[in-house]
Length: 200
Picture 1 (cartoon, rainbow, N blue to C red):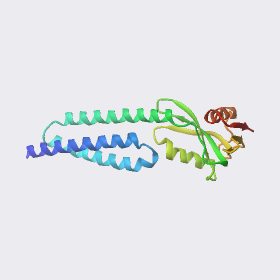
Picture 2 (picture 1 turned 90 degrees about the horizontal axis):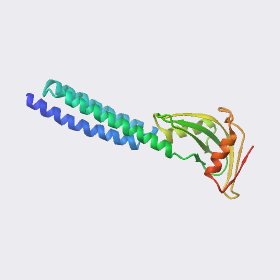
Picture 3 (picture 1 turned 30 degrees about the horizontal axis):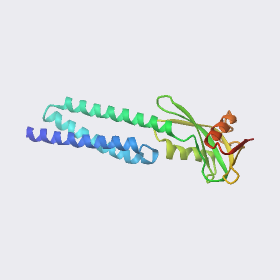
Picture 4 (picture 1 turned 60 degrees about the vertical axis):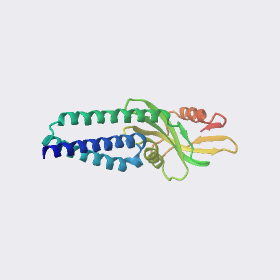
């Protein structure tokens, strides 16, 4: 009976490691808001298997200490890789994304990673009624978890690809005008060096 429990514990430990490393892969490469439900499900399955294997180890082979150390080491590797990937993703994220042409709302948001790295981004959207909807879209589609983001202001922008002009004007009712519109001008100009950028 003890041999059977030891074998069952070893099998569960092997399956647990596969599930945990699968969770690591999912969390690392699909770590945005849209994938959270999938990742949480995988982690629940993985943790359930880990606890089951631990109970088997405790009642059978007596090697629970080695097993738990292995699980903790795997979890630490997952955390480190996840944090490194988040940091890399934040540093690579585009400063400016313009959604379509013509008149549209824009926000300026500051991202702060878990290591303290800060970055200002400008996002526009012509299909939303409120500036806060742009922020929600950024959080959902681009940022994900373990990153702080807050909007420092916004307004409206007119983007003309034909005339190669960008007009920045107005302010957000929810967030107000960003503290330094000249900085917004610089960020947009850096992203579109061939365009004429105007500020009001």
